[in-house]
Image (cartoon, rainbow, N blue to C red; front, side, top):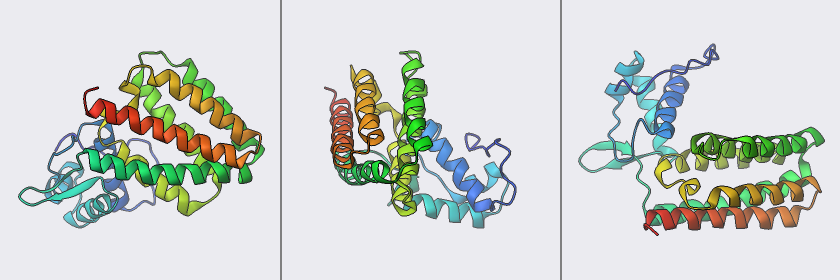
Length: 225
């Protein structure tokens, strides 16, 4: 399993082998080097990262608990595949939580935190229109900033977990849907403005509409429309 590699960010000091293995496997899933339906075993993870089977097993259990890995009756743990029902459940949960985060960000966000939203939106606009991978990453950063501004650690943890699951199959990222990129920028603009002017109800509504639009785009891609 050579596609699983330990992070080179230089921030490994003091972290457990389980955490390092978790980050490596999750990164491989998000980047698509571990694809939906592909088998992932503790033996191969341990060998690829040169660690013992115990932290490898613990990291896989953690990823299974988050929904990134699922148990297959004959193949063991595999990377989760995104089907229609999976997508529906995922985005229903995300709509509720993103709406709550936007409302809390409008209430609790500091001035610098909200200013950062405007800066991140400009970074998205400055990207090359063909750079879907860059937009994919900047979209996550924008939403993560809203979670930080909400100042609720439990809500942030739940949203980040959903975000990881959404990243398992970039082939059906809503960015691949015609016109969706421009729509996302417009939706982010309106959402940022509502949060910045401290309008929690508008922010919550706009966040919910944004997630529903992303769901509809992903569903259309999945169905080949």
